[in-house]
Image (cartoon, rainbow, N blue to C red; front, side, top):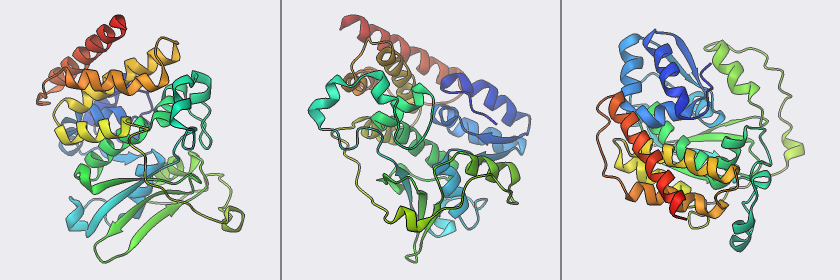
Length: 294
C-alpha cells in the first residue's frame, strides 16, 4: 500500500514498482509528478498497479477490460470523475476569504488528513486526481470530466460510445476500495454496510464552479501542458497548503500562489527523475519567494 502523502511518496512508491511488486496506489502525487516515467517503470518491471483512491478504483471497476490500452480500444468516450464539492460547495464567494484551517479540514463526507482535506476544500485534490486518471487509464485531460456529487455515493462513472454509462456505487468508506484491491480479481467482505438506496433517496449532480475554485482549472491546464508542469503544480500547492495551515496564507490566496509559480516557469520535459525533482525544487523556491514578498 503506497499511501505516503505528497511528493515524499514518489521515491518509495517507484522503488516498489521497479521491484515488480503489487502496488496499491493511494499516493496520487507519484503519478502526478512522474507520469510517463512511472508508467514505463510499471510496464518494464511487470508490477501490478491497482488504484486505491475511491474515484480511480471506481473507474477501474467500471472498465470492462482495464488491461486493454487506451480508452478508444475499450469503447470509452469519457471518464466522469465525481467530487463531493468539499465543505464550501454552497458557501458564498465573499465568505471564503475568512475560511480557517479548521473549517477547511471539516470535510462533510470523508475523514482525511489535514493536507488532503484542504485540497478537497479547494478542489485541488480533484485536479490532482484528474491528472492521475490520465496516466492510469491513458486518457487525455479533455476526456476526464469532473462532476460534483454531494452525496458521495457514486464514486465515479465511465461513459461508453454506445451510450452506456457504468457507475460504481457504495457508502463513502475507504475500506471498500482497499478490500477490492487487496482481493483483486476476487472479492472479500470489507465490513462496509450495504448501501441503502431508500435511505439516500436522491442523487444530485452539479458542474464545478472553476471561478470560485480555480485550483481545478490550474490542474487541468498543468495536465494539458504536460512535462514537468504537473510536478510544478503539486510542489506549489504543497507549499501553499502548508502556509495556509500555519496561518501564513489565506484560503483564497492558495490558487494565487500556485498560479504565480506556474506562470514563473517554462514548461520542461520530464525526461528523468532528476528533471522532475529539479522542477519540484524550483517551484518550492518560487513559492517561498512569493510568500516572502506578501
